[in-house]
Length: 241
Image (cartoon, rainbow, N blue to C red; front, side, top):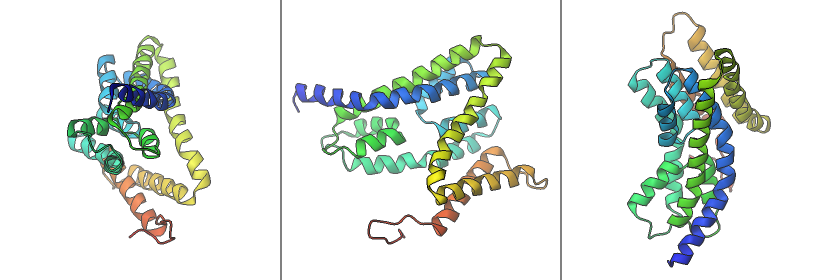
């Protein structure tokens, strides 16, 4: 590939990644405020976002750290929540330019998010390494910069205002789950089953399970139940085995 083509591919990737990066600013801003409020130093908060580039997994893992959960709980919880990225990476690897090297694929695996995968996998032509460089760059900058801004603001805000802004975290998750739940009974049922299991574990006196394991149980159980009751249909109308 010529240098001109590489630059063109990189620019195209950056152009596609800008909306993702802008969207990540708001979410990671909330994470920055929340993490600093929990007592994590600003440099470490920024490092968490730079090294993870996730949303639900990052919030869950950090929450478990703040709750003094065991390393095993934290690791297993984040693995279960983020396992979809492994599947996305495997799928996208089939569309990458054949000249893509192993080291480049590992880097792209780090940069895979739901939005990045959606953009890359729906590209009409072959996905090149330089296109992926550009596509990943802006989301990484947006996620990390938003975290830094939120953490910096969180440090100078009065404690009462920090607590008040922490409510935005719950509002964000509600905003994420409500729209798809309104259009899919299966998603709504999955959410309700998960919430029911978490409430059961939390409020039944004789059930003593850590927060991390409770999250794993609720995630796996709700997914398994709905996979059995409402399997995804393929284009021919047959359920996946």
